[in-house]
Length: 610
Ligand code: X8Z
Ligand code: ZN
Image (tube, rainbow, N blue to C red):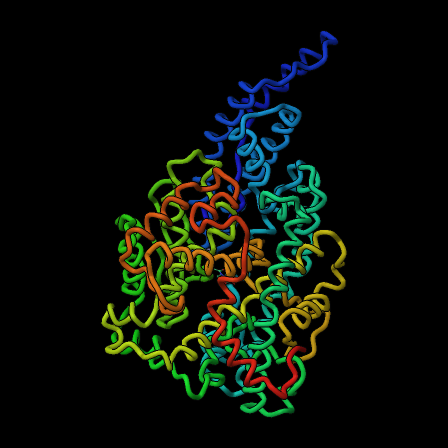
């Protein structure tokens, strides 16, 4: 199963026996028999068996499809997903029979997880179900195939990896704009299908008893959905001053580089200048904004290249980190079956993902690795998914997930926070560990990744929640998308946009229907995890210099939390690792406190905000 996935089950044998019992009761005019705890248990057992089978089949079909995109593999993947969706929906509806029954904790929790297990629930009507899964597969597949011709149809073709490389390295505003516009030309054809997907998946969510699909997604956090939304807002308010301080400094640096006519001193930053297609992480423009007196002293991308470290070796280094914490090495099949390099001869979904195909040890990643510091970090992110999947694999199927989806996303990132200069020296990547004068540079580089990401992590689902609740109409999709990007990120479209565009579709998680709030949660959680691991390892000193590499005690604490899967509520899992029960941005803020101080000094006399 892919970490972000529509999973499911089928229940005909069991449903039939429940339905026939009720039919008998109707014939004899007796009220339907009250369900029992024993029946609920049998229902779940049977659902798990069916589900496991179907999920494995669907994973295989999806794996092949996203490693080899053709019309045929699309059709096969859609077929498999349809089966899974139909079965899960049937199970979820049949499970409603136990709603009024007082059930033991585990049964109740698993039934609830079963109900929430689809990211895209289908309507009960088979024709609509088929339409929904076909649309969903076709959207992800179109994203995977996305290419454009910046010099016209006779000229060279550019894919997302190539465009991203240029956005990361070019400082020529015209070149950047061509890449930005080119990639955003792949998504308008998705608009009508996306509109229909919203209708169909919303219908499915309503049939399962949710207000709409957004409310269903928000119900997956052991809290009432509105309270969860309020928690997210609380965290955003905690970190917003730090984001605004970074934004103001980056804007001033870009004004200096590109001129005030392109980057107005007090306004929104054009989205193509920040080193990333979605302006979601800004680490690639480090050299434009670096503190003059705080050089970090090394460039990891240069080191990887000069040492001729290839894609597989980058993954091996990541694996060795987890092994140093006490985890078993990855199985041989991982190395045989994973995709590490973009194939030259076929279309693949390059967006990085981690898979557990068989709920046991058939673990894989799929990633078009580029030799740079960003992908070195993403490799740890993906491996975090795989090690998590293995840690909880002894649990019943419906508990095989992270405490909430933010935990899954945070795990590998928390480990990657241990890629400190001290660790790089241990790897033999740098000779000398820079002294504390380089800390500002280190913090800036990481802030351009983690702090810059926060509003982006928030806004995708702010947009989708409103799309699902119909507050945003299809005729307003693009306008509202940019309103949110301006409001949260303080960035603007580099050229005029209209409703002929469909810019949300140019971001993977929209066509792929992967909920996104998980990444906002993960951004906060990973610092809570890191602080707890450093404490467990007995590390003194600033958190940005703390590496738990080789520390078995910290590793054991982490493994224990991972092994809980989603068998307990996320506050319990959080407590097991950190001793804290609440999401708390103080670890994040403390980590960046020296940088915040520096930014505030730089920003004196500048407008902060947008
Ligand atoms: O999608 C991902 C991972 C796979 S779960 C590579 N991330 C988000 C993104 O790329 O937009 C990680 C950071 C945010
Ligand atoms: Zn992930």
